[in-house]
Image (cartoon, rainbow, N blue to C red; front, top):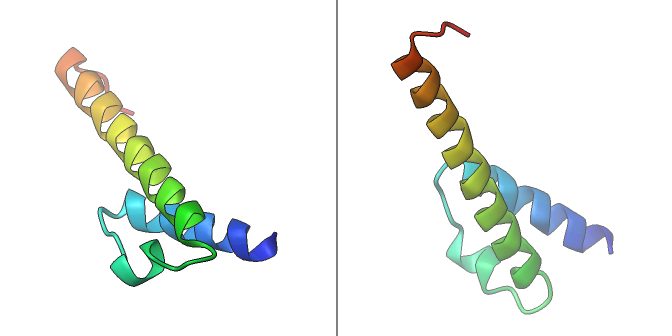
Length: 62
Protein backbone atom coordinates (compact mmCIF):
# COMPACT_ATOMS: atom_id res chain seq x y z
CA UNK A 1 0.00 0.00 0.00
CA UNK A 2 2.81 2.40 0.87
CA UNK A 3 4.39 1.88 -2.57
CA UNK A 4 1.10 2.83 -4.23
CA UNK A 5 0.89 6.05 -2.20
CA UNK A 6 4.51 6.92 -2.98
CA UNK A 7 3.91 6.25 -6.69
CA UNK A 8 0.81 8.47 -6.66
CA UNK A 9 2.69 11.26 -4.84
CA UNK A 10 5.58 11.06 -7.32
CA UNK A 11 3.11 11.16 -10.19
CA UNK A 12 1.31 14.15 -8.70
CA UNK A 13 4.59 16.02 -8.34
CA UNK A 14 5.61 15.16 -11.91
CA UNK A 15 2.18 16.08 -13.27
CA UNK A 16 2.29 19.44 -11.52
CA UNK A 17 5.66 20.08 -13.14
CA UNK A 18 4.45 19.04 -16.59
CA UNK A 19 6.65 15.95 -16.63
CA UNK A 20 5.88 12.24 -17.05
CA UNK A 21 8.36 9.47 -16.27
CA UNK A 22 7.63 6.76 -18.85
CA UNK A 23 9.51 4.13 -16.87
CA UNK A 24 7.48 4.73 -13.72
CA UNK A 25 4.25 4.99 -15.73
CA UNK A 26 4.78 1.47 -17.10
CA UNK A 27 5.87 -0.17 -13.85
CA UNK A 28 3.82 -3.37 -13.52
CA UNK A 29 2.86 -2.85 -9.87
CA UNK A 30 2.69 0.91 -9.30
CA UNK A 31 2.35 2.32 -12.81
CA UNK A 32 -1.39 2.86 -12.56
CA UNK A 33 -1.03 4.78 -9.29
CA UNK A 34 1.73 6.88 -10.80
CA UNK A 35 -0.35 7.66 -13.91
CA UNK A 36 -3.36 8.69 -11.80
CA UNK A 37 -1.06 10.98 -9.80
CA UNK A 38 0.25 12.54 -13.03
CA UNK A 39 -3.28 13.30 -14.21
CA UNK A 40 -4.32 14.72 -10.85
CA UNK A 41 -1.16 16.84 -10.69
CA UNK A 42 -1.72 18.10 -14.22
CA UNK A 43 -5.30 19.08 -13.42
CA UNK A 44 -4.22 20.85 -10.24
CA UNK A 45 -1.54 22.80 -12.14
CA UNK A 46 -4.06 23.76 -14.82
CA UNK A 47 -6.58 24.94 -12.23
CA UNK A 48 -3.91 27.03 -10.49
CA UNK A 49 -2.86 28.64 -13.77
CA UNK A 50 -6.46 29.24 -14.82
CA UNK A 51 -7.35 30.88 -11.51
CA UNK A 52 -4.25 33.08 -11.68
CA UNK A 53 -5.18 34.19 -15.20
CA UNK A 54 -8.77 34.97 -14.18
CA UNK A 55 -7.48 37.02 -11.25
CA UNK A 56 -5.08 38.84 -13.55
CA UNK A 57 -7.87 39.63 -16.01
CA UNK A 58 -10.06 40.91 -13.19
CA UNK A 59 -7.23 43.07 -11.88
CA UNK A 60 -6.88 41.28 -8.56
CA UNK A 61 -3.45 41.02 -6.97
CA UNK A 62 -3.12 37.91 -4.84
